[in-house]
Length: 148
View (spheres, rainbow, N blue to C red):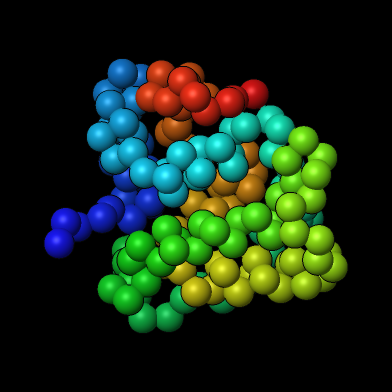
């Protein structure tokens, strides 16, 4: 079975390069539905996050080493990407109509059940900016992704 890189591993690899073309190549070489969704959720202006500004209080997942790698949690974010619909609206349309307090609890639970590095990546997504991946890099790699 082929090893699937965790989303934070792909992003870390991109961050090591300073060249837009190389960054875009790394993204393209790791193309997956989860990666495209990650970029859409970060940069697509038609998507709004329905969560309060800032980072919520959450406890980083246990069972990880100093680098934030959790053997059981690696790649957990890929499986959790389907839950992102609870936290966003698209073109002003709320996809899953749940109470704001419940939405926040579900979000915190998600952050607590994925590798800490992936949780930090989700918080960057929510802030609409992933360090080391500019909108230009995204459109170079995936022209189909709408960016602001």
